[in-house]
Length: 270
Image (tube, rainbow, N blue to C red; front, side, top):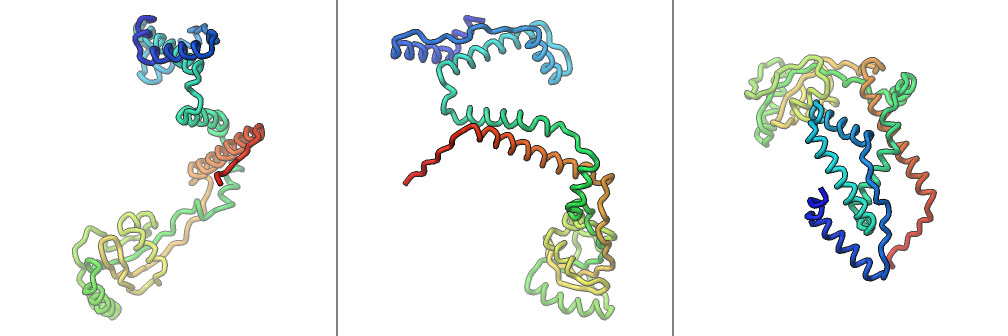
């Protein structure tokens, strides 16, 4: 293993850096902690990670390989720290920040909210958790949105309102939807069409209304008001929101505590 490590380019770089440091300083560098312990706790963690990835125990050779990798990681890591290679490295700084943030929010990520806490969130913003209002309507597709189609739409709208039939241009869209939520309507006709439906009266042909495909004449027959949310039906959504807020609070509190230990001076360029 030692011979293999000595062939690594990074080891050559680290040794050269140590020699330069020693020559410039006129003294031997501080060797620091030179003892690497691979005990049953370390090996047990390796085996557990292996099992989690491959759903089997590692062979003796695989275990030996993991131990060799662990020792190599420790050697590289400690030598890099000893030579100060972590200083002012943006990648290292960001990675350490992410690790500290993970530690700060670990409890919040695993916490389980009470039903009372979830109900408070629902009561605070019931519209967020209410089901979409449902709309029943008929539609006639007129074709692509062109000046000619818009001009024809006015004539055909007048015909529909007097009871005359109007032909529909073939399109991969349903001619009628019953009790469709806004999300389903948007999936078929687009958000612009769905928003326009909200402003239309019921019981009479209206239009033209634009969709992703073109222009439509529409008659809304019924609208159903949003159903009041209950914890039973929206538990997962409100739990996700509760946990996201808890994680954000934990992260903000941890940073505030750490920041309070420092005297921050900001000098802007003139």
